[in-house]
Image (cartoon, rainbow, N blue to C red; front, side, top):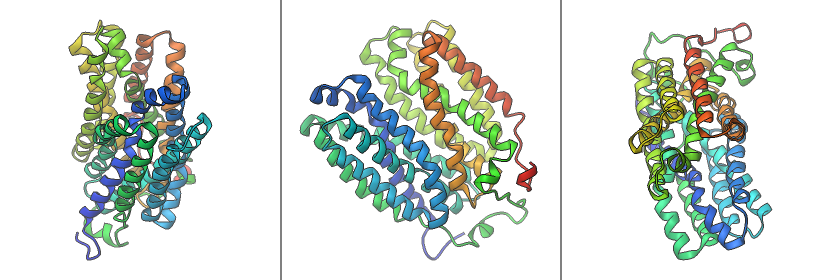
Length: 398
């Protein structure tokens, strides 16, 4: 289980460092008002920057996953750290919306996408005997990024202004991201066979093209889509939910943001660890059930302080779990060898969930109908867990 070149826990350290930096993309809401005040832009114009960044982030994982399977995670993660840090430093010079969209939305967003898959696939290859636990640590660090850097960002904005803040953050993220990237070294080819039990079944090895020809892929993709939708809705609307549905003051409702970050991060580690013990699909069923109950509560119950925070905590906790467990499901269904490329394709479900959620909100006629739709989709996701099966060894006919 040991390797003379590098202790595998240093790989985890590098993964955590890199993931916390790129996870700070979730702090965008802190920049909205300062940018509006400095440049006179409208709120919807500024918020669009974040939507572009998330879309580019998700979309670019298709290419970064495939590339890191070919040239190695360290090089791709290094490119990601440079794009992310460089994009933020360029954003400090932006004086027009187009520049803001290109520098932050496209360049920094692509940097997150290039870096995101590398720690996941690398750590899983070093820890084949505890995939859920180690994936939980990696994606948990991503979830904690916004929590860790929130105070730093607020300090810079208050003391240096929003434009200078982007420059300082870009420099910090680039340095820390580059350091973390250098630890993302793949284990020797024979490493997995040493760690794995001798009676482990033969692993399926699918290319991305072979994967999308299987029925299993579409079940996994749809389940991931439905699992992410409720979490993304709640994260984006937490403060509004508290004020509109629970009658809370803005300052009290804003506390939900920090609470969601903590439950999101803890859910990634706890559900990932539980999936090692109880099985991946079983915990996905449990997460869908909790999500459905939480969303139904918000859609049919008159929310109080307690039910508001309890419902949000349930959704955030399970949302983190979906992000921890589905990379592992992808590896176990379609093979660890091409995990980077394959998960890049599966991860598009997250990107589509981010796009579909606002469409539902705009057409459902209010928050409660929206949450009821999300609850129904969570129930459908739970039903699919009883249908989905790993593909057969022959990908063409599975």
